[in-house]
Length: 307
Image (cartoon, rainbow, N blue to C red; front, side, top):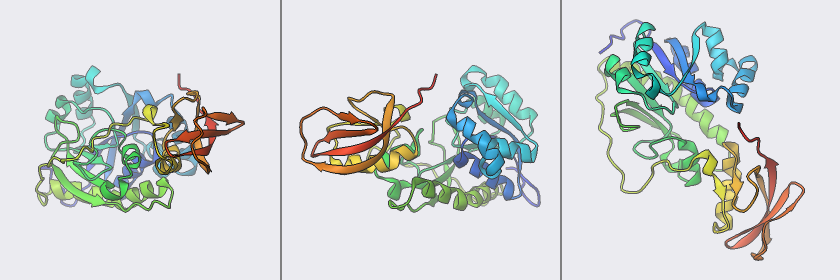
């Protein structure tokens, strides 16, 4: 165990350029601890989220990877998939001399070489109450299944060789209000979760927490929907379509089966009555679309296709 008495903990942060991930990184620093460096996936450098993160550095630096790195004077390093440089990644991490490695919504598998270099000192912050919704795209999947009110929250767990199956240190449920924007749910987790994460890690390293083995769930709650697969279809009922139109566009593009891929849903406009059997009818930025039990009008927006 790392002694935590009367000293700061130095963390190598594995994160992503978005306010949710970086809100926890900022919370780690606000709790009085240090950041050795921030490593993020190189695949995010040409994305909209990376551009927005740069912009946030000027207006909300506390939730921006660029803003945090500049304020604290730490390296912000893009990294390739760990699979391509496992031994070198462990060596580079050790050069930074962190006390811990802290994964904050990082999507890559952390290899055994890093786990061996930092035994019992690699932690993940997962945005669900594990074992529910292991895997990637957790918030998207909970919203898709209308399950955020049951499984929403944070799990701090040790990282092992199996993705999201390490022993649990502590969990913090987060309430979900269906009438509020999804951002309210996410920022609620950051606000309450940041001190919780710092406290949990310090208490575990100080020998005050005994890890608990994860149990398995009977029902299937693995994350399975990817952003590219978020699509409305005519076999959905109106109530489900209306729900998805309200929440999914706040996270990613929501496309429609039978409609060009360069268009996505902006919002649900109105119910139009019974199904007509007619194909989707586009007029300007509005689309009339048959669901299984009724026809609806949706407002559309163009999708910027990533190269």
